[in-house]
Structures are given as C-alpha cells and as structure tokens.
Picture 1 (cartoon, rainbow, N blue to C red):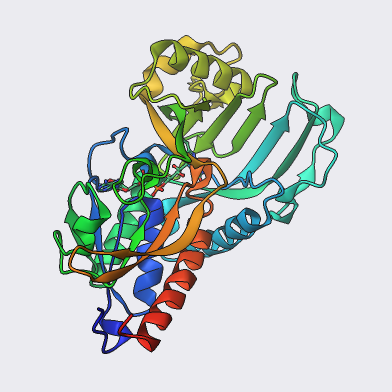
Picture 2 (picture 1 turned 45 degrees about the vertical axis):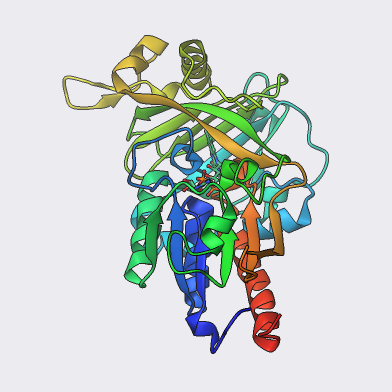
Length: 371
Ligand SMILES: Cc1cc2nc3c(=O)[nH]c(=O)nc-3n(C[C@H](O)[C@H](O)[C@H](O)COP(=O)(O)OP(=O)(O)OC[C@H]3O[C@@H](n4cnc5c(N)ncnc54)[C@H](O)[C@@H]3O)c2cc1C
C-alpha cells in the first residue's frame, strides 16, 4: 500500500550513466526527490562496466526509419545545441561534420534537418565512398559532461548512493535509501543481469577507440566501409580527439586489443591525415606533415580503450510495470535502457518519454492510493 500525501514527497531512484543522469534531472524538474543508486560514478576510473565514459561522443543520428528514435535524437540535439551556447558550453564543441558512405543512398537522408546540411558532389568524395553529406553538429566531451550533469543533479538536492544492486527488490524495500515510490531503471548493460529485470534482449556491441591529443583538429569525419566498419574522428573541446572504431556484436572482451588499436590508427590516418602533428617552420609557420605515418601518431596517444554499447533487440525499452515487495508494497517501475550506440544523442529525448511514463503511473497511484 502506498501512502501518498503529495507528489512532491515521492522518492525515486535511477542509475548514473548519461541516461540515468539526464532522466534524474528531468524528474527533478517535476519537483520530485531523487536518489541515484549506482555501482560506478562519473568520477571513477574508466571501466568496462560503465559505457558512458567511453563514448566519443558526437551527435550524428543513426535512427534510420525508426520515427520514435528520430524524434528522440532531434529533441536531444535541440537541447544540447542550446546547452552548448549557454551554461554548459565547456562540455561541447560545435563542428563541421562530413559523412562518407560506401554505398549510394537513394532515400532522403535523415540528417537533412541538421544545420548547414548538404549532399557532397562527386568530386568531393573520398576513395571508397559513393556518396556523402556534410552539416554542422556538436561533440560532447563525455567525462566532462557526465560530471557536469552530476554536479547539476547534486546542486538541486539530488542524492547519490553507491551500491551494486543484485535485485530491484533491494531498492524497492529501501535497502540503500528510504523505500522509494518509484524506480527508474537506466542500467545500460546492467539490465541484462539485474535481478527483476534480466532482459536477455540486451546485448553488447563492443567498440574500441584511441584517444589522441590533437587540438588542431576542429572538424569531424566518418567513413563507412563495405565490411560494416565505421572509421571516425571526433574532436572534443579540450583538444583531445577520439578515433575509432569497431562495432562487434556480443564481443565482451574488456581490454583494448593491440592489433585493433594499430588498425584503428591506420584507418584514421588514411581518413584524416591532418591527425599527424604539424611542423613548426623556422619562421614560426605551422606546416602540415606531407607524408604522415602511424609512427607520427605515437607521441600523441593518450590511451586506447573499449566500451560495451548497451544494444537491445527492439530498441530502447521505455515501459512501465509494477513491482510488489515481499511485504506487499507496490512500487512503480519505469524502464529506460538499451540505448546502443546512441545514448548521448538520444538522452534528453528518451528522458522526456520516461518522465511522461512516470507522470502517468504516479497520477494513477495518486488517484487510487490503496492499489
Ligand atoms: C566506443 C563508443 C563510442 C560511442 N559513441 C557514441 C556517440 O558518438 N554518440 C552517442 O550518442 N553514443 C555513443 N556511444 C553510446 C553511449 O556511450 C551509450 O549509449 C551510453 O553511454 C549508454 O548509457 P547508459 O547510461 O545507458 O549506460 P552506462 O553508462 O553503462 O551506465 C549504467 C549505469 O548503471 C549502473 N548499473 C548498472 N547495473 C547496476 C547494478 N546492478 N547495480 C548498480 N548499478 C548498476 C552503472 O554503474 C552505471 O552507473 C558510444 C559507445 C561506445 C562504447
């Protein structure tokens, strides 16, 4: 039985990746009190158990013809674009972006909505590409952005509890903080094993990357190839640049593979020879290296790494259900996980849907407090 005297007194729990943080902030805007419970926090060392640290990240929608996903991506872009011109400017970099495709694309591109969008002419295409587009977008400095979201959450009175949850009943019964009225599950890959959820439609798509120090790169570029690989260059505001990548379903290997690192560097340099550090001439002019090799990149490597994109058959799970505790308390559950390779670029859109679902179930509870 839920004893509710007013929605503002509801307690909610979520998790702490980019999806959990965005959702928690949107829930706070409704006036609810939120506690985040998570095993890994943004300020922790990077780990394979926390995907958000590893993302590039850029906003380049891959929603295809999934209308719900397109809407989430576009809504998120509008919000991030505003943030990048305002209080969170330091988390973002606005850049010109070019996408080279290995095939002719007959349908209108979903990226047509992006600022400065245009199709590339035949003379602009790279070897191995048959079509391409360019537009303006933004990149997100993932670790900086996560910490920004967390500090915003804390400054609004949010609470954080570090814990590894075995089963949602532990949260529902108040093992980590006072028993909540609702739980929002934003557990990323954790949704596959978390007791009470155990969603076997969730699977990893492993992505390996190399982080370089190359502040002279101020544009983004991606090229697809026939073997399904994407090579990409994502500059961050800090001057660091992520190059990638790989995309392998059900590959759980938690460490970067050296041979993959070598392959990524080689592909990235072919796509973007500007990555090689420029020379400084005797008269102080900056000169591009005319014959760059992978060796030239060695001094600017910060780290190689890999993360598990939390993909889900059927796309992001945005649904509600109820959980009854052993003592008979009914707790509302909202699911928001399974964001695959697009968790940043759809974060605010999916958070808005999750909050609408939450509002719906909590209204029902308020109307029927004895259920
Ligand atoms: C190489 C790479 C490049 C990427 N590039 C982009 C990009 O350019 N643009 C983009 O939009 N996306 C990109 N992504 C995808 C993006 O990183 C993910 O979609 C996103 O980070 C998923 O966030 P999440 O919050 O769902 O999961 P996570 O970041 O993994 O967070 C899950 C949270 O839940 C907690 N948790 C889970 N289970 C439990 C449990 N049982 N107990 C306690 N806590 C638990 C974890 O500790 C963590 O705090 C990329 C991913 C990779 C790997």
